[in-house]
Length: 76
Image (cartoon, rainbow, N blue to C red; front, side):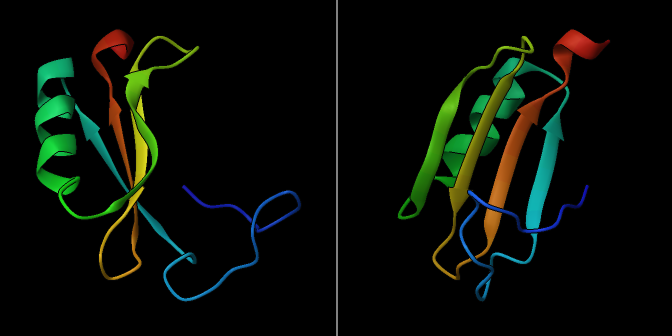
């Protein structure tokens, strides 16, 4: 997945050039991944049900790398 940085997005800085996306197969797996990644990080968007029907979250780890966690259970 890729995108340009356009308004209203923040300017690209170290760590914002990429986001690592993890697609879990089930909601409980997505919750476990989120819990494992979320200790001591900046949570941009908590893990919650989105309009498209799956769980989704965004966070930035202690090294400035952005992560996205998504559950694909609804897509199957």
